[in-house]
Length: 446
Image (cartoon, rainbow, N blue to C red):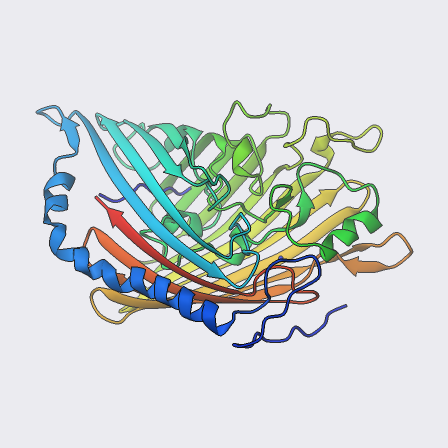
């Protein structure tokens, strides 16, 4: 069964890594490049995951029977509840400190993940979803010992037989953009998220800089993933209510949530923080035909919600410092090709600094080589604006970056899928995280 989906940023040249030489930055235990031994070790482990997956194909017939039996229903179909399972095993290998939303300090790590989806329908008007997940943190390795939690829970009411309007409340993915609709391991052509959804930068939701100079100094240290934010934190499973629907070729969605698009998973539940700075997000889209899907999104709300004891300038409140985000998205399908693109502009109002702007985008192309084998390429970029530096001038508040992702995927059957991916990131300024990432993923769905 398919898991549910919803509508819903002074430069110096960085040397390219060599194969045989390792270079370490001061105070960093991780090399900036792979040695020949590390490459052989990493490729062996990753290729093993990728190549051995088809061996399980002959053993999946029992999954067909299990998949067809995981439901309860009344005879007339008025009530039906379905259980879906999505399990993934991921292997990551980097030359040094992992980039993006890969936590921990181990350059080579394995991440298991198990998601259970319970979909329930009562008549033609009521629907509920509960997603229970076990893994090493919502973001890989954030919780090394493993943790179980409810990532989503919602109740939806559809007044009419047509999908003109749907009313929904609970904890669920944002309706901003299009990538969120295909973010899970089965539907995402890649293993990781696009740069706007996982690139950590120097905006913090836990502390306010004491000066512009202190804010700009953050560029000189490696990502503080427990303190800093991204433009959007993955699918943003925040809590609240939404109204969405479709009117002929027009899609719309409007939601009010307890936390901003950039907020981290620790504040997504409705009981985690108060509702003093809610976020409003909207998307308007059109599907002129089956091949095209175009949309525009907007979001605004407070992002300084993770620390109740935050020190702000006298007379100011956290609501005076919102995150404002606008975006456009497009997708197109043609024969064996699929294309996606999003462009996102964000402004953070930063205490004692001013407006900190960034612009990011990504372009994706997927091509089906055969009925089961596919390849995909993604180009990502993020640009950062300038802020006053406290001495009468302005400086960029973080380092511009680009990243390229290439993947080879094999959908072995309707239950098994495996992917092999390579990513390379270039960042202006000092290289503070790994610039290369090798990863493999095996997914099982029923």
